[in-house]
Image (cartoon, rainbow, N blue to C red; front, side, top):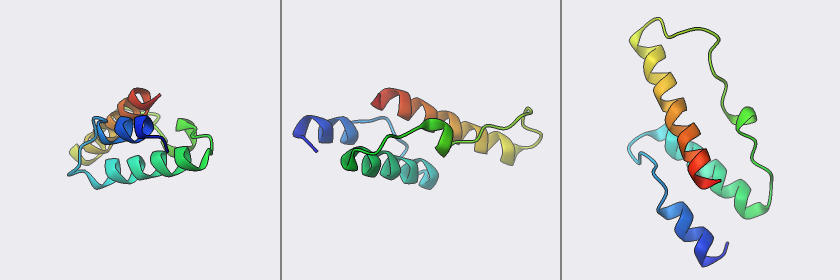
Length: 74
């Protein structure tokens, strides 16, 4: 990756304490560095209904953060 690309990744708004978000960041960076297309639809599956409990809400919040990261990197 170029210096500019590396800077983009290291300055991205990712929650470093969130393991799922960091895993997705690694997937984005790995695919980008290899020139592999990164389709958000293949990485994130959104639920068909509203969250019914705190765990589902937390999962949806993490997915939202990953989508925002994806958009920021584009």
